[in-house]
Length: 113
Image (cartoon, rainbow, N blue to C red):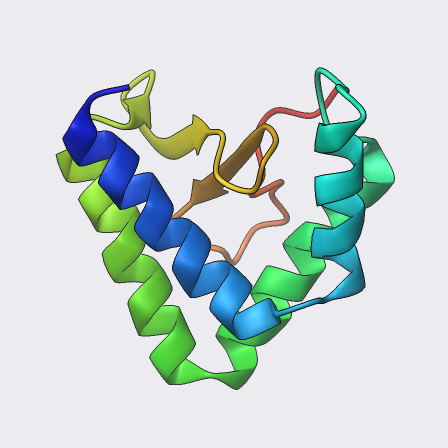
């Protein structure tokens, strides 16, 4: 990963972990990553998705900081397949964040298994 993308991913991690702190979903995500899992379990993926979505809905400043962090990843070349999806080793494990219209039910943390 180049330095610009690495710094952008670090910023995303700071934004999310700064807001969610020791949320159980992030703890579980870290535990799965430390256990060497190749992908998050569906349940952990859902919990993290819900935690981030709830935080976005409840905190406009967090939503803005998250959008800015994701935009920096995109600017650093972190988009995948032309879509607004970034993935990487953000939370000590495979993760992805999607920006844009969230009015449809979507998985915001990478492809479903």
